[in-house]
Each structure stands twice: as C-alpha cells, then as structure tokens.
Image (cartoon, rainbow, N blue to C red; front, top):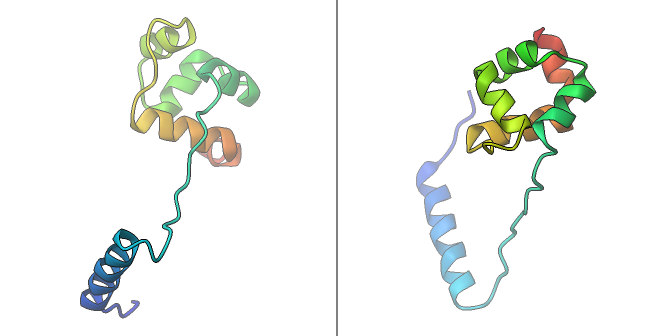
Length: 95
C-alpha cells in the first residue's frame, strides 16, 4: 500500500488554486473528443447489436435508438464508448 499524506495533498491543491487565482500559474485542461457513433464502433468490432448491447450494459432497444439517431448516449455510456473506441482490445477480452 502506498503511504499518502492526504493533508499535504489537500494543502498543495489549495495553494495551487490560490496561485491560479493570482495569475501565477496556468492549470492543465484536457478536452476529450466525442466518440464515433455507436454503430461505427460496433461495426469496427464486428459485433451484432445484441452482443454490443450486452457488452455496453444496455438494452438492444437503447442501442438501436442510438444507432438510428432517436437518442444520444449519455454520461457513463459516452465514456465507455470512448474507451472501447480507443482501446478495443478491452472489449475483445470480454467476449
């Protein structure tokens, strides 16, 4: 187990915020790209709708709604689509 000094980490964070507010440091930010449409990801993986929906943890109907543009993936589903698109080997190990 790694020994961490949470108090020191919190104080470092507070000091970093203070420095940022004073204009002394620039904080790093990352913009995450939107994943490709679910259908494109599914076809790249060569999975049926049923198999892909099962791996995503959603109903086939939900996946069909995404693929036909009636609904958009939200929250954790977007994150999971981003992961499977960038690291398809993760899903390949699951099925």
